[in-house]
Image 1 (cartoon, rainbow, N blue to C red):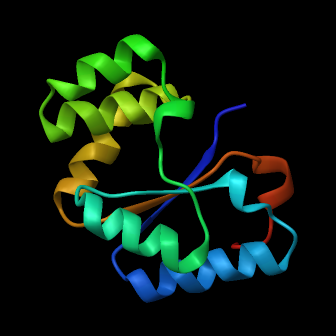
Image 2: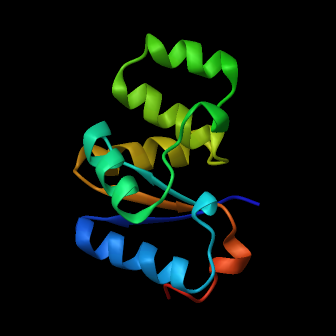
Length: 116
């Protein structure tokens, strides 16, 4: 099943929502943060005990190609590795270009209704 994704412009709102998910029993291993700025991604993820899309979520071939890729290409590849189509990944990457941060939830069944 494809992960659930939400876009945020406000880091505080994102962190509040992540805490709400965790308070409702969503395990941190099911929560991912992604943005165009690696420092921002890591800061948010560390503050709320969430994940970033790293080596364990990616195919080895994509890890190697990401080393030589532009930031946008790398982000699109990461999104595709998480289960999004190429066109969805392009759309979300464009939103990140505009400063949005993505919250990706891999267990959509458990998260249904918590953030609605």
